[in-house]
Image (tube, rainbow, N blue to C red; front, side, top):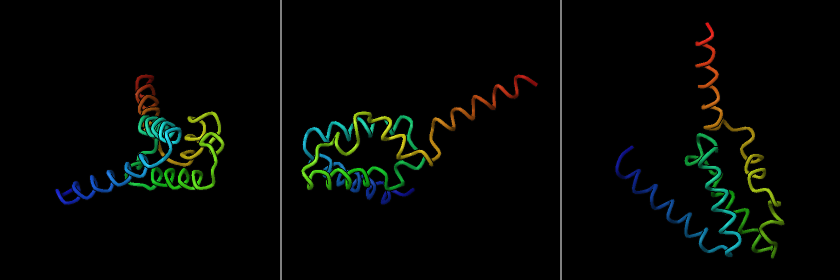
Amino acid sequence: MGIQDIIEGKKQWRAHMARVKALPPDYQIVYKEMQRYLFKVGPVDLLGGSLLSGIVDFFEEGVAAGRGVLELIGNDVAAFCDDLIKDSRTYADIYQESINGKSGTAEK
């Protein structure tokens, strides 16, 4: 990864976060909780993919339709996030595999 790639990535991230800041406060709170959750347990390709920008798109549509954020995602933010990433390889999967691999070699 070259310096130009890093600079471009920062520009894209700043533009993304500007979109988040343009959302109503309740949407921003929920987005930040989703972001925190996804960064912790989310898919390995989270930053390279379109998941976060897709969430912002979804939220912008909800705002335009006059719907509350909890109307869109429900009361359980983690469950909503889990459903979004259910078919993706996550850091939690990698961690579990490493534990299983270590315990498998210790038993032999």
